[in-house]
Length: 248
Image 1 (cartoon, rainbow, N blue to C red):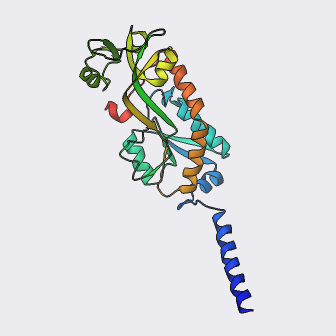
Image 2 (image 1 turned 60 degrees about the horizontal axis):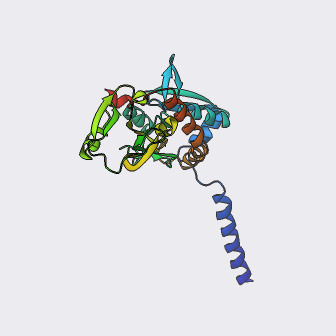
Image 3 (image 1 turned 180 degrees about the vertical axis):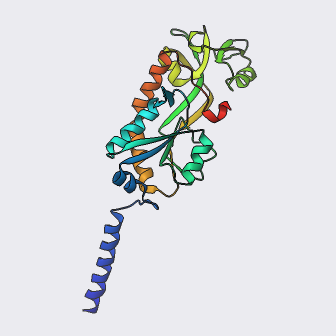
């Protein structure tokens, strides 16, 4: 009987663990539960076109649209706070917002202190050639157009290219240095060498593991619609901007 009792206790213990695990992961401060209960998702927006922006004072851009869809799925509305990245990351630390978006990269200095999501989109800057042509193996002496102020210029010069800074990259003739989604939109053929690589993420407060999992699953499912919106912006001739903070 004692053996049977011990087995029963063990089985009860395992059952309790399994039942408890059904509610894992958990939020240390109940973020997702509060969003569903109160019907409000508090989102921070860093102005960073084409990912996010403002039009007539209203949030716009593919990431802003995706946040609105996430809120809708949770039966909530979005309460927006628009501010530079550093200010919004401090708001996350204070739990004054639930998520921050705006073309944020995994290299952001804040990600180790907060709940950084899984990268949902990796973008690479390369040199591209017009349709029907290819990027030469060596860029020595080759003219390459870049957006004025782009930090790819020095690296291109180190490769021997003749850098031409332009305001309207989508109208520049010949070789262009641009993000892969821009090159795809223009029908350009990308070269193999990568000038820069960035992984895009959304950020939530630290410790909100259930909420982070929900956000991760959602944005990974919506990565392709976001990319399609980026393609449309490139075809329209829109030029990516630096985040709000970088413009100061």
